[in-house]
Image 1 (tube, rainbow, N blue to C red):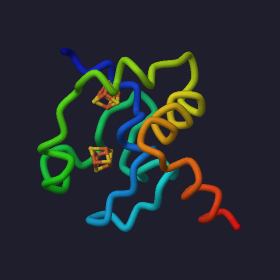
Image 2 (image 1 turned 180 degrees about the vertical axis):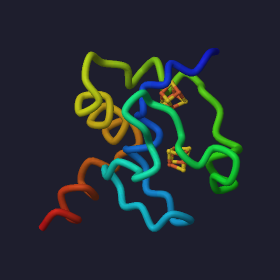
Image 3 (image 1 turned 120 degrees about the vertical axis):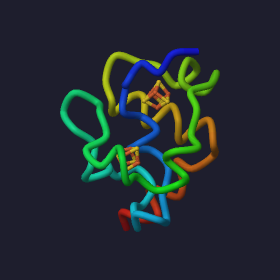
Length: 84
Ligand code: SF4
Ligand code: SF4
């Protein structure tokens, strides 16, 4: 399937290569949903492919999509822990 440039996978999961915690928007994600360091993005980002998770998490706002994504992966609790 085609990437919708919805920003969910650059916000919801933790990305250790970027020291990015769960639920925090990647600082390299542009307002139009593109990667600001595309040519040098970490391997984990390079190997990520859109799949059915993108459709399952889809919602009108990024906030809702991130919440859905975290729910799907059982990470919602982890976000709450991180905010405490
Ligand atoms: S969650 Fe899926 S559709 Fe959205 S930006 Fe990532 S790969 Fe693309
Ligand atoms: S480095 Fe680029 S592809 Fe990786 S999470 Fe950040 S914006 Fe997304």
